[in-house]
Image (cartoon, rainbow, N blue to C red; front, side):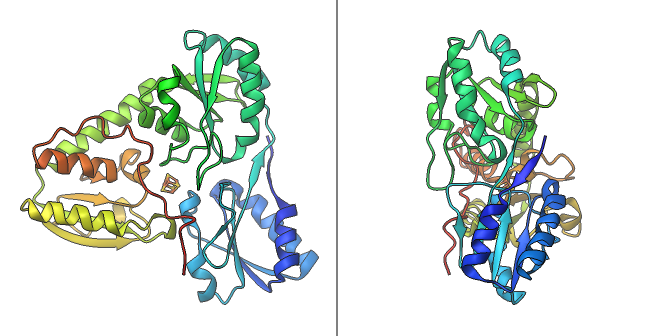
Length: 343
Ligand code: SF4
């Protein structure tokens, strides 16, 4: 397996914009390749790169606001391919692609998927170019294959950990989803959001994993956290400060609903929601955070309920005497603001 950053695009941008200093951020798994690229850029163009030392988990982690603080000329956000290629005033998205092939794991998957003849295909940034070849292979074996349409932010068949808006609309046309790539994170999300049987196709180990048990465990924890939060009288409502997940409107809405229903609300803002950051706020009995929903859905280390937006909706519904329904089954768990960032 080799993940390759689209260096040609980086060189094109530099030749066109002629920056002196660039600010770069990339996910942890791509830091080695990113540092090598920064050296190449220095040798080829004499351009200085500053690498962000903050976390970079998703496309929400762009750093457009920081370019001016660092007196840089532009930012490169590596590894989260999308339908948008530029963000804000200064930021260019740069793709990274994994060259691993799915030929072998498709053969394994064809046996596992046999009871589900209508299959939805989805994947994340690094394997998007494999969707069509896998579709053809499955169709040759008699499967009916659907790939969800792209939209303003996402490419055809793409999913993020919080946004399944390409796959969600085709859920009624398929019997199961197949997620290309070794990512329980994306596969569990797809299973929870669509409510469909979902299988993860790992091309490195040639393994096909049924995500039902893992998804059900997360679903139960998510529901339990909502019911635990029902007893809380003091809430912390956290707005994330990352530029792609600023959900002030949702924070205001949930604060208003909780206050109207007799709960005390303390509004907070932070870049990273971690047990350490929440620890000093001892008087708060439950938190609602409107930043990355996966902090809540996968975060098993908090000592008090920390609810995501869909869980907050369920909580408010319960407080106000309405049925919460299958609150995780929706096309998006957060409305990412990437691509809408305007100065
Ligand atoms: S908000 Fe979405 S894109 Fe950002 S880290 Fe969380 S799951 Fe990924």
